[in-house]
Image (tube, rainbow, N blue to C red; front, side):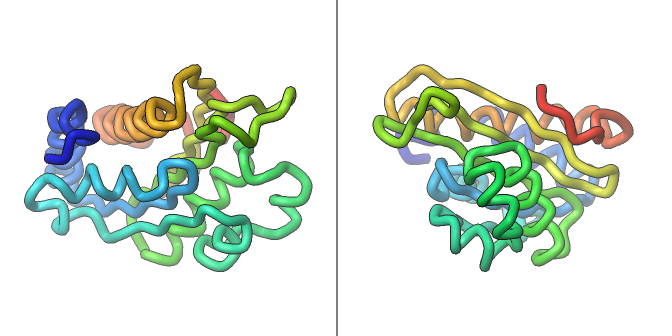
Length: 175
């Protein structure tokens, strides 16, 4: 694996094992991670058996076109929000017809933050047949560290959800 992926090998293998055991499929929609998550997932042989694909939708227009985020949601809540993360996850899940989809949107830094949305603010959303769930994070590293932390958060979220089933936590709240 590439240097960026080394710390994640075991975590990605666990995610892959759980998905293969369950027979579920996965799609991703990435903004602030810029494709890092898809890269990590596909570094492990056999990923094509569960990972259907993903998109990097960095610009707002790409979020609209590629995942179906409503323009109004972007205008009201901004690209870095729980609402946009959910729309991205639900949109890519529908477009790629997968069992599970994850989305990540955030401000990796070092610029782009504000008082209400500081650098490091990241939302991760997961959508499946039970609904959706969102987690909010505030990383304090540099751009590279924030991207790695976001990817790890997505992988951990996936592992938590697949290991625990999808019976609970689909209230759409932020944790």
